[in-house]
Length: 415
Image (cartoon, rainbow, N blue to C red):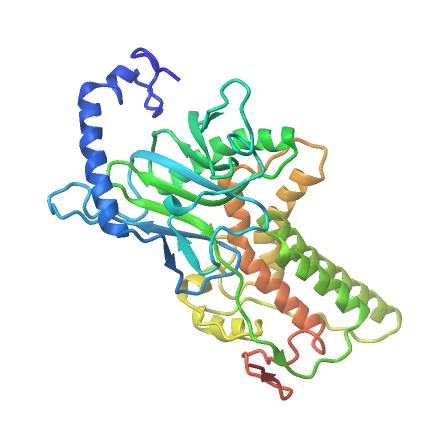
């Protein structure tokens, strides 16, 4: 694509290209910055292809990590920039992967430069020979959103399948802003290709680079926890209980935050319906039924014991993980009814509109901020689901853990 001097600058500033990134001053500045950034990146990465993840996080959740360069020239204005980023020019890189096939070991943070990426979309030799240009080794995709027009270059892997999408430069206020704008524009293009071609196009990693400083922010999905087998008093599993845990396993097997949310919430809804049924049956038979009174822990300190009673393995709960349980809608000590009605049900309603209602779609699966809204609520929903399962099926679910996380019923951990 040729950009004329009078054309709008691709960065989205609203200025003509000649008065923005196409000006002689900006071209010279970019040349100096590119040299400095590449030197800083070489110094920071030291040829590393991956880093090891050494901290615990909620499983299957988005993780963000910023790599901030430190320049030898202490007077450089890009020294000491905050890890969340600043207003400036950004580039976003999306690494694709085939569903179910990971590009790295679970607990490794791969350097995106070392990843080829992969997909089912053939764009060059040897997988496909483009009829108009048999030697083409890249494609151009364009996404137009409310944030402007974005250009992406698609690069094949060694087998000729689309592996990466890299945006042109654009203005953003922070790393999060850049990722949201870039993701929104890229998925506007690839969702259309996925639908027309009937192939999945999954994103494995998103990397945003602040071009003025070379600082980088990575986003990927945390792995599931590894757990030893704990043997305890396991009774025969009833048919009703088996139906609940089958849905729970379905949630864990999905890589979609939206589908995982629906599965967990379905269990919550079903338990609430079960309790109403038991209450009606008790009333008809003049028996007594007391519905469990469930609440979030009263504070962050109490949360550690509360969480330990909900999971089979011992987790070193940190402040970040614990903070995921509360939000502006619900705070410490909130009843599960408030948690469900104020925090979880509104999200469930939006998803229901997206999937099943005949009305217009209010939530786009391609909007990173919406997916994050769902993902941010998943740790809380996971805990609510597990607490309700434990209350409802005490003989079967986590019967080897008391409410403070202590092993009971002669449970033992196998090697």
